[in-house]
Image 1 (spheres, protein in one colour):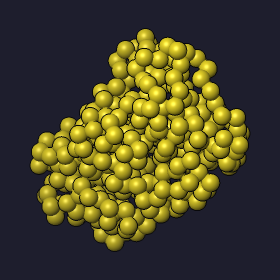
Image 2 (image 1 turned 135 degrees about the vertical axis):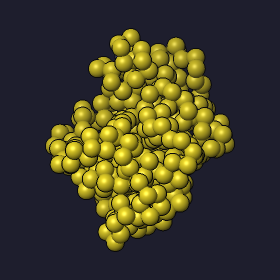
Image 3 (image 1 turned 60 degrees about the horizontal axis):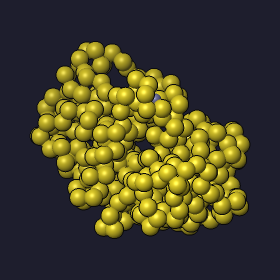
Length: 340
Ligand SMILES: [Zn+2]
Ligand SMILES: [Zn+2]
């Protein structure tokens, strides 16, 4: 079968390979015919040799598909089920302090699907049944593939950030994660401003959850926010992961406000940490999912409170993986999904 794989460590070394079709290895396994795989910033980090991964490995941790075979122990899932996958919990031990606190992401035994074991940029994917969650026919495979990033945003915005109706919320960085965070902040009652640079013009135009969008290349975001709320933003959510954005957030937030770090930051950045103490800010961060945010993401896509597929800009066949990776790196469009 065809699969987009990271073949060895270091930058590059990604290729569309022809590999044997995987089969069920353990009685708890299920085999999925992949329908959609979302391209995430993590896949781009892996392309450049960063982020933890174990090559050779098939990429993609945001996937959906139809179950075509189940192992002899499998009871929760049956053939024909339409499933989304929780990639992050794979291998979590279930009894360390983090697992017991439902924070499986921090389990030392964890091995994510799409980086430590084969993921969704392939025709078939085999995973343990505990990672698969059936969804009704009313949830499209596009939406199902994006439950994973949605759950990240839910954890950050709804569980780690206290938003009170009427709060001014600034989201910096209008990528797919930033725009989902903006939607969720609005659902929580926030009045949302989304900012980005000149390169983000088309992404800002897709910020449906925002009352205002600001191009920081042309406008001072701090002044703009203060024209709406004299003291500054009640809450800032950093989704760009670069020093300039972090600094702008620290400027735009009001004294006693809240700063939440959502974007991953690979390398040390220089920021004015003094702004945190002189404004006495509450600083939060949030990475990946936990069980409550995963559960809530499933509920929200089933009842259509939010539909992350609204942010898909490109749907491409696996063969065009390079076009998708290059486009995402150039920040063209928004979310890319591949299908076999
Ligand atoms: Zn992701
Ligand atoms: Zn554990």
